[in-house]
Amino acid sequence: MAVTITWTGHSTFLIDTGAGVLLVDPFLDDCPTCPIQASDVQCDAILITHGHFDHVADAVSIAKRLQCPVLCAFEIAEWLAKQGIDGAVGMNLGGTTSVPGGSAKMEMAHHSSSLPDGTYAGPAASWLLDVGGKRIFVAGDTCLFSDMERIGKPDGQGRRLDLAMLPIGDMFTMG
Image (cartoon, rainbow, N blue to C red; front, side, top):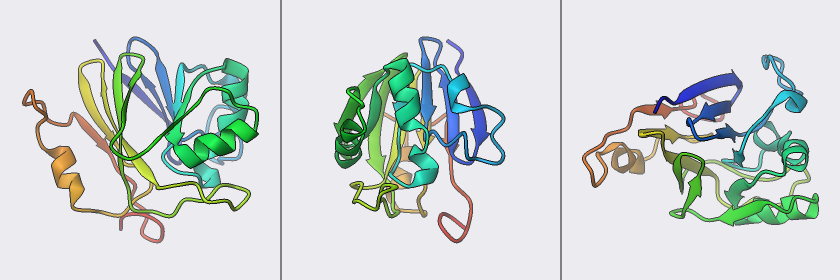
């Protein structure tokens, strides 16, 4: 099954698994390089790496419009519930859940995480996706850390990563 990934700007990606579309870190309307608006997005699930505005800015409007699940840290899920989102799925590092076309495992990241109103957003995370027969690591915002070696090793079936999406940006991420 083919997996198609579309970068829309900043850390926002649309991942078509062949069984559905995942939206990672929705920052669309206020992103100067994004070619689409939040109102144009069609997805089956939203994945959030951490609570900073440039990763959650359009999560509420998209989740309300599409009634799709939002996979995120428990604290972000609690905040989303207060924003009227019923489909927020709170997780913690190490947890795995089903997504259209496969699974998503919440891995660690080293980064701060607070929500637009300043409240604590739980731990920053990355995502290890096993979708459409592909293993994809979505690092979110993070520095280089030793568990990336473990994440990059073959899984129990001998499959290596097919793609690692890494943040390069010096001041806030890897340099």
